Structure formats: structure tokens, C-alpha cells
Image 1 (tube, rainbow over the protein chains, first blue to last red):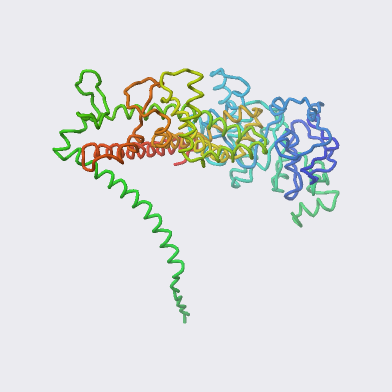
Image 2: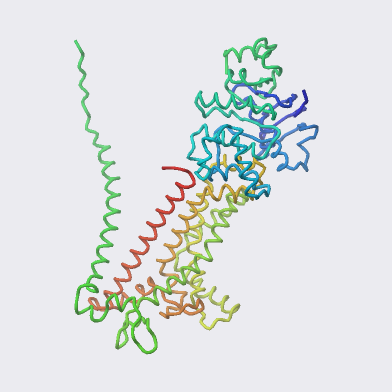
Length: 251
Length: 316
């Protein structure tokens, strides 16, 4: 099992507020790692440090190192475009662009200068197949993406990401806008994805973390309380606070 | 036994008064709009129905070329043989409007994109109110600026034959519609949800690609609405063109000739016209024409915005 991302002594501040304190953890290649914890504990912040989406927030300060394949991504000369090509992200609410289904899927390729129509079509078919949307959408490629159902939109966002062939997929509560059946489909998809991708998922849903992830990290008020194999975290947590949280005593 | 409760409905007089007030203000707005149209429209009827007036001015004379030696379209309502072709006025209006749009749309939309997508906060806080302040400048001041300052500058640079012409008037007019277009465009861009920008950046696009590929398409209906609004405003604006256009009703496609617009014609001539004369009814016809044209422009614009919105967002 190879280490894909290694986080070392990570501190994140929003202005004066300390959002993450001395985080050390490792994300394993081709496994699903879940980050759990109550609202405001910093799990989304941690996720967003992995592709430097936090840079967009005003007044944010990041200290420490994050290594992707052994390379620190918090150097001054880090190429953010390349980084985000390798580390893609799916958001909480499906956010397809107000373009057609096709234009959404090829967006990431076009901004990198791929314009060969035949190639684009091939990739569209492949990435839709990967999220099991091809049969549903093959006749709707010219339709506005926003006319799809929420669950289709979320899978479309995932397909849009797969089209640029990332190595790591970050998911920020990807199912919170979806109903249980749609959630089931996305979870099934995650199992498929981990064959080829390293997946990090932030979730509020304890059952979801237990169902899909191989490793889990529990955060509380900016501290990483406990990290380990999901089976162990959920059956025999070492820390009392983890125990309290996963049994639903708070959070 | 079932207990029966009687709810006594209290006469809520206060709410009734407020509701009536609000409703009647809406009704008053619509009714006055209709009344204005009816009044102005009524005064054009003799052109269609009075045989006496029709001898002097009719639709043929207003719009079609006349068999004359030199000029086919002439607006000379107070010569010994009055000529009532409004074609030179329409051309004049279109020329100043086109120049105004060419000048104002790129500037306003560019500035709006800059402030909403690229500018740091402090700069945005500076530019936005500054442009919106321009909207508060009375049009007579803009006309004055066009007539005295702008015309002289342009004259010195290009040495045109006519100091006051369609370009001078158009640029001054552009200054008047710039804040309108800017404000509406800026609002449309700011209304684009941040999740689109994040989604685009997370796919590895840079800020320019994000603005061009995602934010602009998302805001397109609003931007188009801004352009329609700007066009309508430029088409009907009076004081600026009255002052800076040279006011010569010439049928010419050259932008460096002096022009006279429909609105400026009404403004200059209505005060001295003989009530009930053919000239009088013609001026009202011009007013109705402006009204109807602007109305149709706005309706078509609305319709197109709806269509665009549907195509982008899949709303039904």
C-alpha cells in the first residue's frame, strides 16, 4: 500500500481563527479515506487544503507541508493548474455549469487546450460510462446540464472530473443533497472508483463512512483526534470522544 | 358531542388599507402608461383619417421616397411646401444610437467583468460607486460636455467638416447609458453562484478561463437585458443629442455628418407648432413611433432573455 498524500504538521488559520491544529496523516493510494466529525470541526478545510482550494478564501493562512507523491504542494512555485488536474474535487451541491451536458464534460479538457472533436467525443462516452450515465444521457448531450435531476447532475460532475483523469478525487459531502436511493448509487460508484483512484470523502453520515471507507479520520475542533482503519475506528475506538461521536452522543 | 368553535374574523382594517394602497399604486402606474399612450396616439389619428390632413402628410410621405429633383427624403415642415419625411430623423437616431452602443457596451461590460471577477475588493469599492455616480449626472450636463468639451477635442484630433456630428453626439450619449448597462451587467455577474467559479477552478481552469467559459455564459441573459435597456435608453434620450448632434435633418449614412434625432425633433419643434396643423400631428406621430418602437424593443428583449435563460438553465 503506497502513500499517495502525506500531511505533515498542518496548521490552517482563517484570520485569527485556528481551523486546523497540527494535522499529521496519510492518505493511501487506491483506498477510500473518510473524514468525519461535527460541523465546523475542520474536515472540509482539511479536504480543501489537498488541492489548495483554500487559497480562494480571503485571509487564509496555511502552515506545514502536504506531499503529493512525495512533492510538497505548498511551495511558492507550485503549479495550481497541474495540481488540480491531479487532485480533483466534487462539491457538496452538484454544480454543473449552465452549459450543455457535452460542454460540461469537456470543460476541463478544453481549458487545457484539447480541441480535437473526435477525441472529446470518445472521452465523453468513456467518462459517462464510468459513472453509468451513458445510456441515460447519450441522447441528451445537447441538453442543458441543469435540466437533469440532482443525482444525475452530481454524477455528471463526477464524470466531468474523471474526464481530466485525476489521480485523487476529493468529495465534500457529495450525497448531502441527494435522497437515499441516489446516495446508494453514488456509494456504489465509489467502490468502482477506488480501483483506479485515491478517494477522500468528507461526510456527516456515520453509516456512509462505515459503509464505504477503508480508513477514517475523526476531527474535533480542528484536532485530528483519531485516525485508522475504518473497521477499528467504528468498533473499537481508542479515544473516548470518538466513541461518543460515532455512537451519537453528540454531533 | 363535538365542540364547535366559531372563529370570528376580525375586520383587519389596517391590513386592508395598506393592501389597497399598494395595489392602487400599481394600478395607477399601468393606467397612466396606457393613458399617455392613448393621448399621444389619439393625436396621430388625423394622419390616418382626416382627408384634409392626409393631403399634406400621410404614411407614404412619412416613410417612402418622394418624386423630387434633388432629395427623396426631406424633413422641412415649415418651408413653403412642407416636407414630412421622417426617414432622415430615423437614420439620425439610429446613427447616434449605434455610436452610443459601440462606445458604451464594450466599456460597460468590460468594466463590469473587471470589477466582479478580477478587481481586488478595495478597487471594486472604488469603481462601482464611481460609475453609478455617473448615472446621477443630469443629461443636460452630459450634453453640455459633449457640445463644448468633447466636440472640441474630437474636432482637434480628426478635423471633421462638421464639428457637431453623429459621433460626437453618440459618444456623449454613450456616457449616459454606460452606468445603466454597467450596473445591470455587474448585478448579473455577481448573481452567478460561486459554486460555478469553484467548480471551474477545481478543474484546473485559471481565472480568465473561468470568467470566459463559465461566468459569462451563466450571466448572458442578464448581460443581454442590460444591452436592451441601454439601446432603449439611447434611442429615446433627448437632451444630449439635442445639444451635441448639430440638429441637421440630413439623409446621409456618413457618421461625420450632423444629425437630428426623432426625440430632438419633438423637443425643438413642438413648442412652436400650430396646434391642429399637419406638422402638429406629425410630431405626435413621431412620439407614438418612439413609444411603440421602444415598447417592441423591450418586449422582444424580454422574450429573448427568457429563451436564453431556458436554454442555459433548463428551466421550463
